[in-house]
Image (cartoon, rainbow, N blue to C red; front, top):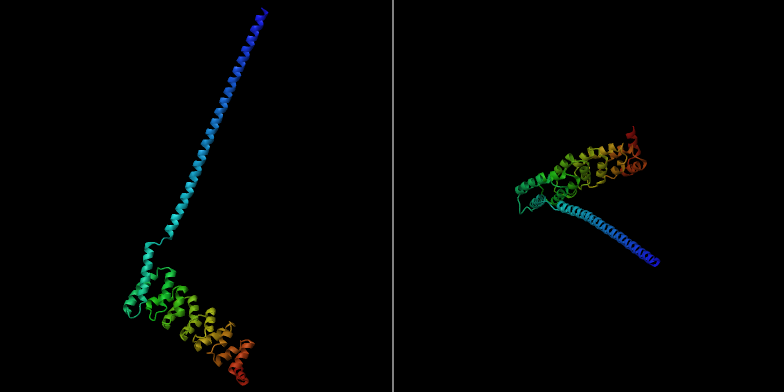
Length: 287
């Protein structure tokens, strides 16, 4: 009897142990399944995030590339010459070619008509186009009046080759430039070779000291006596003119005697040496 009870107890204990171990295994399996499910969800979430990041990065790259391409196309369009301007440049060059033809291939009337058309186009042309035309016509022996007067009163950069180098300009053209030009035109005129006495008088009458100084330094300018006397009178207030006046070949003793009274010691000595003024003459002038 006791043996059967012990045997029943062992059987019950074994059954309970087996039941406990099976339940533990089941719990372990559930735990492992839960872990696997959590890992799968984490991986899925990570994949979705990575796909979203790649999509956003791709959108940023596409936007940047699109903006760069737009900028390139805008630059190409801006740099490309417009057909209208290109045709204008070609027509301007052709008109200048016709004006510059020799007298054996074009008469005066045809040259004048072409020059009138060229003047109308130059009024709305860029600075470099006007400079190019002025440089081309500066070597001509005969320039239409309308074209030359338009160019010599233009900006100083345009008028420079004509005022300095064009030998076909008349005194009337230069006087027109002096009258309707500005300070820069006067400075260019003061440096011109073989400047006439009329132009010299006009420039001195402007009382512009830089222009007068430049004119006095130009030994090829023909100063008249009225122009030189006006410069002598101005030298009383502008002493920097005295050395320049002393170097002029047009200076006469009468003007030099006037200059003597406000000149410095070196200039006075030079006046006495150059004009040989004796004491009696100086005493007569002082009395």
